[in-house]
Image 1 (cartoon, rainbow, N blue to C red):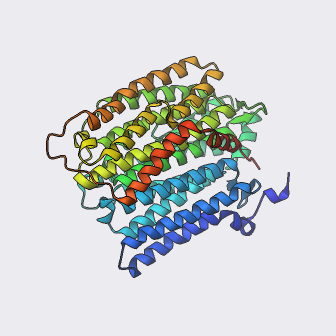
Image 2: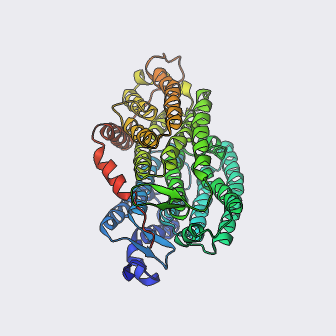
Image 3: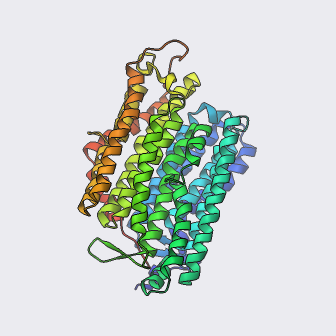
Length: 497
């Protein structure tokens, strides 16, 4: 093994430039907030910072795989794929925040500082290579998310959301760290590779290991809003500012899946060299996650069917269902399943963030987030947002020719290839079920007549550019998807050090 692949503290710094820039910016924002009178400029500065982070992350794609800081952080294709996705998620959230009336009424310096700090934690989640770094990065993201979800300090709804998030998160975090302590005690090491070696050599009894994995899965399942750890999502999405809801829906979920995949695939499974992973440790956690996948997608869709009051709440239950779809690729334990997950998470970012942008546009103009506020949207100045929302809704359903269709085809193909026909059938049935509530939104925008009081909807240039980019991206990923699929396939590899 090349000794240069294992770096100490000082040699690791050049390979951590995106995180260094982001960390520096976090500190700088709290100082800039004291010096800059025009707070609107802070959003533009934050956008430039995230653009720099995206560029720096992209430049690392051609760097050889390494472990940094004595093995606590890993730099490989898998980590860089998620870092790039998370940086783009933060970029989109900041763009939304600049155009959000809710955010303009807050202390913008602190808001953007905390948002950048949360993004920093997510980047470390994508590259965590031991239990300590995994827990610290996840907890850092959680703490900043609690602040962001309740940032509208004069809103009772936001305060309630933040408090619930804190309580749920504290319980999940406590369970996860307790589970990690069991795994550490059984394996005798914090590093994922050492845990794998200890379990592969029969160094752990199955029952204590199962308990440790179940408790750890509680914390990670909470992060991706998988059933039954989903309780926080609807209230938090409804109470948080819309850009924060979108950021949590796409960024936090992607970071949670990055950590979930790396931990389970590198610590608890063994790559055979034929694109297939075999379980180690004597615990068949695959069956547990299959049940989790089916329950998550089914609950999310059934709950979304009953949502009438708030569209953010509907998107929250939709997000739970999509966590279930994504878990389909997780349980097959193949490279094809990993590629399907990575591809689907990228597509999900584009189409789901786009849906939140439309909700924000309607809320900016009318102050309403409920489904009734979308009545006749296409005929009261919102033709472009209505068309874009229809694109996002049909893509989330999984209809061609949109990116969501291709993403689900990859997921279902990976499942069928491993002969998990019942899981594929559950996914198809749930996709059909989701059409009812997604189509309800489209019908409301185009077929329902306004009854008065909904108000006209205007699209400014700033938000129109983002909405157009996301709508076009959703269509392009349904027609010319292979560059992203190839990138996801190349990134579905782990450097073990």
